[in-house]
Amino acid sequence: MSQPHKDKDHWSAQSYSAAASFVPKLTQKVLQYLDPQPTDRVLDLGCGDAKFTGNYLHSVAEVYGVDASASLIASANQDYGSSKARFTVLDCRYLEQDIEAVSGVWDKVVSNAALHWILRDSSTRVNTLRACFSALKTGGAFVFEMGGAGNVAEVHTALMSALLHQGLSIHQAQEASPWFFPSDVWMRKTLEDIGFIVEVLEVEYRPTKLTTGDEGGLRGWVKLMGASMLGVLEDASKREAALEQVCEVLSTIVTRIEDGSEWLGYVRLRGVARKP
Image (cartoon, rainbow, N blue to C red; front, side):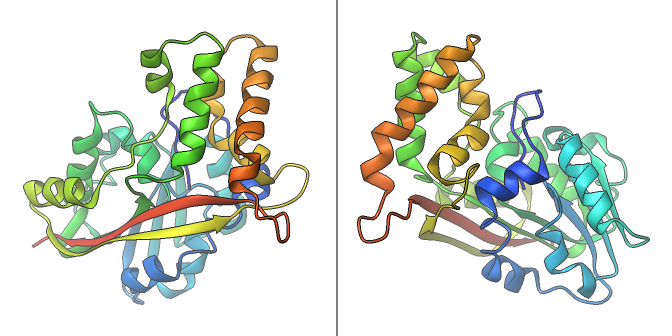
């Protein structure tokens, strides 16, 4: 469920599962708010490999999933594509350019763990949220969960520091960050300014256990989720050195001594906004 602001496609269903298989599993609340109904037509924004979509697909009439990653969309179509579920490559920063998406026929627009990537670009941020409004029928609901202010602050800081250590300026390091983690105050005002009626908006601090295995854990998470930050270092040896520094700096911070498990400080921003 991810959508980096860089053009290079770092994603694959295999790498996502290895590094972040917990993401589509920790969805009880957002699924409750989605409240899927048999007649619902759903636009799934930043659907990724559709593992999250699969949690509600059987309960609705139609799903149209969009994501910037061609690799993840290929996996979505392979595993979940059907007469009632279509998945298309689309840079959701420009959602308003997809006529089908913004046709005003959708009962629900849902996004899980993707908006913090999609909204990274300040020049397209509000337009994307306006497009979500346009996509909905009157009375339709925009249901989302994303990273909120302070999300994964420890690894975000360590990545920034590693880039500085490799010679980038603070501005270059900040520009390389692929995420936008807004506060609930910013999100409420922005949605209401667009015309939404905000019914639910909540912040949850949710420490999250990382996966294990060769491509998992902290290293796997940073390598995948931080790929666009590491990618600004053109030299492969510098990328590896930055990755190692992040892992070494965070090793005692994210590791629990009782069992060696690794945890990151996830902050989730979750909401339901309705089109009147």
